[in-house]
Image (cartoon, rainbow, N blue to C red; front, side):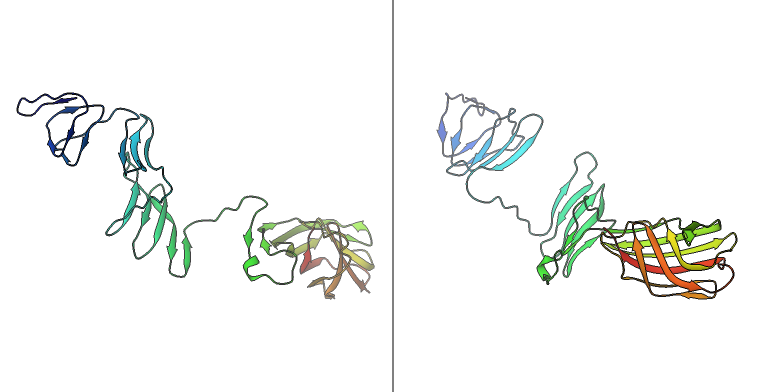
Length: 264
């Protein structure tokens, strides 16, 4: 050990009640009071150790800095106001902990997540990994699942067949909203020409296949020309069968409807 102050030089591993030194080089220093007026420099992996059992360590490996509670207790960080975690190179906020208010989490210095009195506030989309969802089991009922795992909106291209014959169309459009296994869809089709008396008609190319074993229970409203489509229809695979009778010499050219069904 070397202590330079008023010309004094002392030996290895001394113990003092009070040390106030301008320059200290040592492997081990034990003192009841040490005062520094400049920087204290520690080599890589040299630790500041606190506590009778050495429970708290502060050190750097040269690439990573550590503050460690190595005992069985907790590590508490306290402040009289807020606690911030910020980047060194950018000074960007990463997290902010308010003593009597919110906890804020940031992405590239923009707040994305915040706790509020009533729960949480999120800025942006919540991305849920495939196969996961929102679990409502805290309010469990009699169902077999309370996991909300899917929501989707999109478009689809309906095709038309009458008595099993595919019809030529001049325009077609469709939209859908899928909530869990329930699909709500709309369609509009303009046939190029009519020409068939119809005992049944079908809308094909549904965006999702119907549940296995579903042969009825599809509900909706629509029209084929002046003929109103009944609200009780049938689904098989990706085809919506419209059971009705059109007692005219040709099938009307304008088709439209809104229907719901359950997917696989």
